[in-house]
Length: 287
Image 1 (spheres, rainbow, N blue to C red):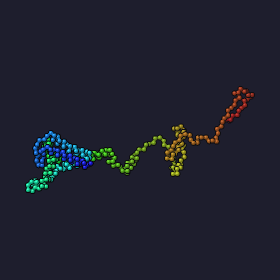
Image 2: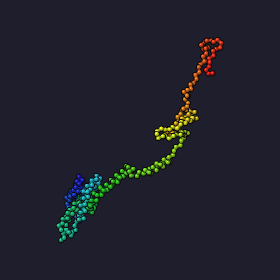
Image 3: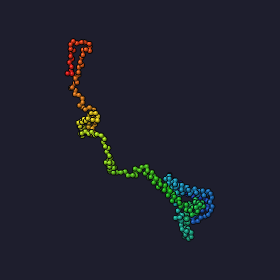
Image 4: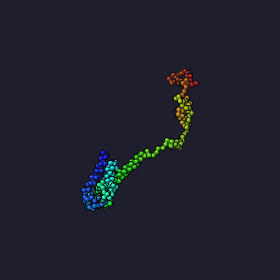
């Protein structure tokens, strides 16, 4: 399929150039210029041929990455250089030293020269004979340079977009040692907050590896600000004391001590009975 692009473009250029040969006589011949008038249709066709094959088709080939199209254009453009490079000397085609081979080669090269320059003949009215006759030599360089410039532009554009989307891939990441030094410097420069108020500490023993933690003896302190309420300091395994507010652990009474109950005094006058003499005295348990 890609080779078909090359063949179609190359044959289309040749067919378009042969169409301009119908306008007789040829304006550009090898070594001479034959003056003649140009019609409107020939001028429009020459302008279209110039814009389409020298500008539009190379740009399309580079944009769509159809490089076989550019190869077909370049191959046709190389035909314009054949008469300049390989046209035999005048002594080989005329006179006693002329040969059939050289005469045939000269005839073929003159036909190629007239074909490649025929599409640009009417443009001589605008730019002159010298510029119009040199337009055929621009097909080869433009068919190579335009796709190449588009390819280079696309490469740098994609590289720029990739750099903007992922800048971390371009900037080298700091090494682990450098990162450790920065972290140590930041930790060293940290300002520890000051402790406000009274700090209560309690001795704490290390936790044994067997899983049995030895707890330090409980310390009891009485805070004056709390109204005489005692506080038990219970150390935790991690070394931080825990304050338990409440009565001391020796506050509960012992179970063998029972409180004494006072019996009430009985007065018989309450029932309306009179006693002879002195009233019976009820012993008082309080004595």
